[in-house]
Length: 412
Image 1 (tube, rainbow, N blue to C red):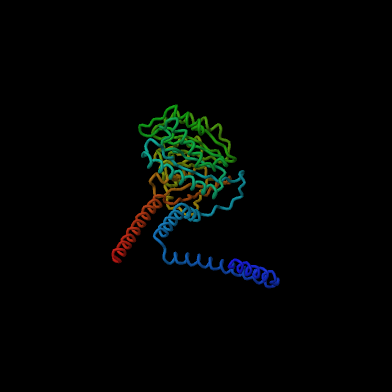
Image 2 (spheres, rainbow, N blue to C red):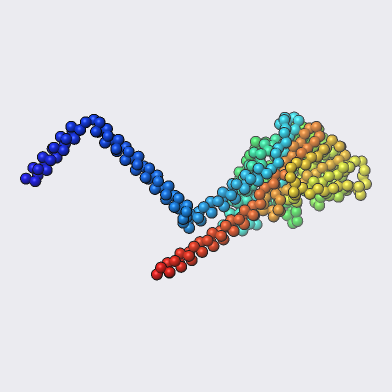
């Protein structure tokens, strides 16, 4: 009986629904669409409320993650961009390589080795961080200057002189990975004492020299780039035989054909005793000198260093401190008896100097040059920032933990 009444009522409902007009059906569909839209609005409102509530009452994990992200973004991205914005604008140039050339100098990068560094994991982390710093800063400097020539002023590796074959191969892979943008320009490589020996008890050998020349280029010689002859002296004041070095330089003079001559040497030249360098300079007659080795930025000026005055006491060299150089400094080398030497600072933060950077020179065939240093951020300050942030985060976690513990104890 109950089944009969249920079947009958169901039949009546179906019949009534079939008689519903089209307008009523459209109204039902409209109600469904309206209900769906209201539901979506409720979901959006709920999500927004959750986000606002979390912003008003952030959890410990959220605060910690935000602080860590801010520190990482600041140290690994923002600080490099901000520092590059402080670099002086590049001079307006025609970029005609027959009239002017832009030269980027990288001095003493000294890629960290394996033998003298701490073991795993400290050594691996140190090499990784130093390589990242060099790669990032060199890429920025290269993009900023778009140089015609890149000159590496020695000490390319920290342990290049004593590295085993497998170690040297790994250092070469790292060097090419870091300074890969330079392959788009003419590159000049100068060896330093850390590359082939020559300082203290780390003596030079034929094996070290041949290995460097096999992977890079000859220690000495003349590299011509348009109107400039780059003269690679490989001059060392304390170790080279003056007679032998004079013979080498005499052979180079026959290859000098460009109107502008620039000596590139790892150790400083003009700051040495006149009796050691004057005869060599008279043979070469350079217009400019660029050197490294001391990891600092200086400018040596001598108005009459190339004059015919052979008096050993006449060597009027003046030094300008460029460690706080802002903007561009100029040098006029149309005076044939004057001499300017620029010492380029190291580009590696591991050398311990306060100011590090890349040198940039815009040399004109007409006889003038503009020079500046693209200063780099202080990496140690960034690393200390990580340490301070870690201490602050641990302190906040400790305080909040104590606060939660006290609340729970009070409720009990």
